[in-house]
Image (cartoon, rainbow, N blue to C red; front, side, top):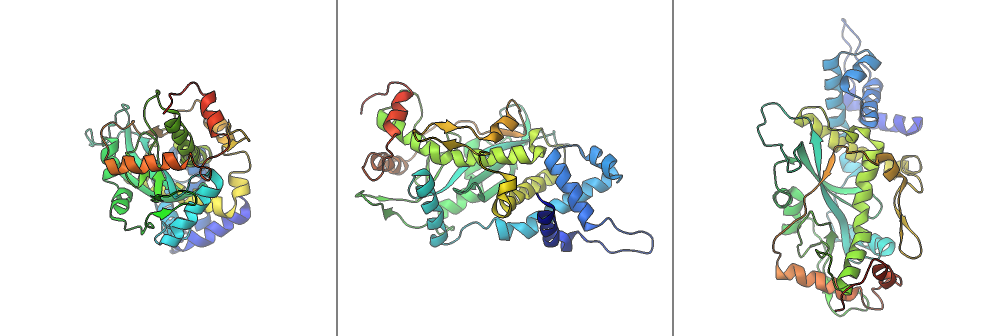
Length: 363
């Protein structure tokens, strides 16, 4: 970020970081506390390294990072990470997905990640995941402009992926519609009403409000087209996580801190991501940093992929889901399949792209 942006961020969080002076010593300033924390998050260096660089005690560094991350979340979440709560706000996100990625009635792209951490003390197997590492779960949804719209952080890594989603606050809000998602509506050129849905990959379940791709390789051409169209919209959340790992290198390796601090670190980075995307995007993620497409639908890899290439990092994908889904959810998916074949719902290159990937079965 630029010096001016740093000063602006400092003005927002300084009220929670400033300490009173005493007759014995002067406190560490709010600016130094923020500088230390941003350096820790952006470089991924250890807290011991920050202690040497700033000539501050190791335990003091730990406390500063914890308090500053908490202050960043407290001060930024309502301004830069407000989860939509009205039908009008959801429709605005849907219009952006339709305009930019040709997926109607999409209110967000979602994914779940295991944030790898060092083994917490006396935790037993609570944080031990299927990959053989220790982690907490980060479930996130984003809009068409690469900003987070809702996050759920902190579930045990041992949770299976279906259980982690079902137990999340996001899933419960979508199930009960406490988010006030609009009711199904007609789309131009299509007889049936289509509900407003999120798009996810195989790691999350198929729901009537959540679309995931058809499984397997031996798909019909129509189903392959649906998978392609869903993948274009879902790529948003993949890029969001990619930008997060590329810019905040604390995620480039397992995070070494207690679980409460790791949660604060993740939440702070999520808020900082949205803050910089909305206020200083030309510096934070310039043109070419995210994935793009050519006129034939071929993907051009974003620069963030070069930065995180061959890097295990602290993010691990959810395991693919198996099991049954409701007939209502499958009926919604089939409705989207049919819409993508209509003159109003198709994109001109979808058949060429799908056929270029290999022979498909006919319907």
